[in-house]
Length: 227
Image (cartoon, rainbow, N blue to C red):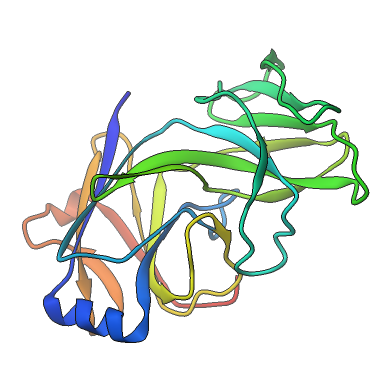
């Protein structure tokens, strides 16, 4: 399994500003091809930082309402890890995930049927993924979240694009409804397994590091907006 690395660098002055404002680095992945709605990883940066992960996922179920920003995605049940792409998992009436069943799904997607009945008649489903941040494990944090009705099937397709930005009062494994600074995003996959970025305080974005072949990196920026 290929490991991916995201390296970010800051100056001492950057870190002093972040500390004074209570700001951290937020890392997320897109949800269903759109903007991310979950803070996968949040960390207080050092001068040089490295996040490492593999493209392996598990499926989780939560009773968290994702309409509320900052809500913690409490995972009441999880599938095996890593989950098998292209097959269907069921959250059974007892509240546990069954073994995967073949269902003709797309190879790069994950499927889960909500067979757990509750008063709301829906649960939140999503994918979770492990990582290490500056050598410290960050295990089982959600990367996506969407409401799934009782007896409906969730189709979850992960992406290798990673979003990152600076924000205060955000923690890992929580719902994002508001982004207050520009988001930068880099795409991994193929020959791109490592991306090195420098923080640019003049724009509030991340740019390719000076020793990086910029032409090989797909890097973009999005202005802050309500998600």
